[in-house]
Amino acid sequence: MNRMIFLLGAAVLAAAAQAQTGFTPQQELSRVFELEGISPYPSPYTGTLNFSAFSSRHDSGHGHGYRNELKVAAKQRHTADQTREHFAARVTIDLPDGAKTIVAQYHGEGLDTLVKVYVQDTADAKGLDGKAGNGVFDVLVRILGTDGKEVTTSMGTVRSGESFDLDIRFVKREAVVAVKTDKGVVRTAPVMVKADERNIYFKFGDYLQALDPDTKAHTIVAAKWDAYYRQNHIDRSRISFSNTLFEREQEAK
Figure 1 (cartoon, one colour):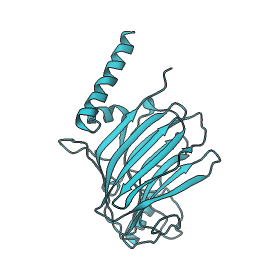
Figure 2 (cartoon, rainbow, N blue to C red):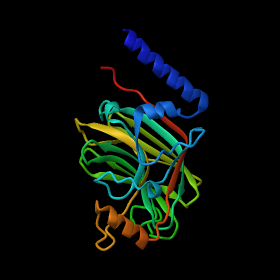
Figure 3 (spheres, one colour):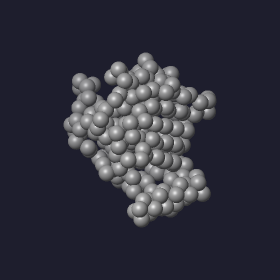
Figure 4 (cartoon, rainbow, N blue to C red):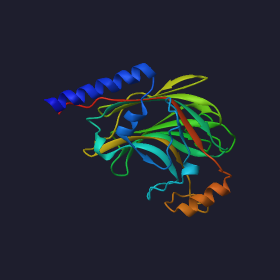
């Protein structure tokens, strides 16, 4: 009983801190998330986190490019049916033409990715712009449906130096993503994600995509990522999240 009262008290205090500041305190983020790469927290922290996969050069061993992300720690994870979370932030990009990065995603503990939010200046028929290397970055969301197929939604476009507001809600397998640019708001239809008894986890930051420079296929070899970045003149990356808000409410057990 005392432990339950303590946990409820801690949750109330965390919620009160968020309400007062308008963003999730660093202490609360550090309690839930673990870090991949260099620390994104400036000092003082006022709700803004700055990620750079290019500077961090963190190699997870099974990715398709360097990472600098915060991801929900293993002890904090739950199944998709138990997960009720909300993430919101203003995302500002600093990327060279031709770059592509994942700024937020829900991942299974296997290799399945349930939700992905891309920012990309690469050729993609699903994008509103869809052209490669012209400095116009498509914001795309891909959600893995119950049939095992990804539902892709074009959310708008931005240029390097510009921002968009990102809002992600994941409630008991139903995912909804909204993006606001200077051209308006686009919201995905609610999608029920693929059922899975394993735990899932949310992560956000800068996951700078790379391919084999010769075959243009995915590769887990970091030396080939370096060659791909050089080939495509990708010499920096910086993804900033301001007014960062992460809220969660778990099913009672």
